[in-house]
Image (cartoon, rainbow, N blue to C red; front, side, top):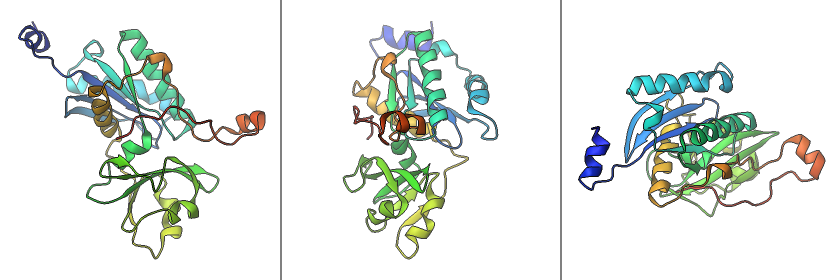
Length: 249
């Protein structure tokens, strides 16, 4: 009889083992999490296509932690915004694993997960390169979404103008903001690599899980915020229609 079975027999419910998948940023990563504990994490090689390295990274993570896919009780996935291709691969992978194992999933905002890398008190802005002189960004304070910068797509100057005093700016888009923030008291936090963002996806996913925040696997879809060029031409609209809010702190 394994440890989980012994606990269940005594009427104690063990927190589920969560696999977190993050593929929206420059370096895809995975993490295994139980309760409030990081059990292991693995960054995929950013020098290769995500589709080529994600499953080998998962195999290596399971081997490192001596755990099996069958032991996973649920999934947390970074749902966007971010790389269109990366998001499609991450969501498709989680859907395949969840359908194959019969386990539920939790969707987590990529920007909320990135904000977890900015340590210390005060306001935080998570930012990703959205190309064309724009950034995906969102503001957070005390671990919660902030009204001064709701999740969205912003020209760099407009993003910089919204930041409160002493704001820490973290994420792949930091380099784009250097000139716009020159002379301000904003603190630029370098991209978090080699630390994995999946650990923060896992932490937020576990919190959402404890609140009953899982969704049917079939409802998992990437949150791009801005439409691909082909969609812009087809619909005449640059941005996605408002959707159900993604789970954030």
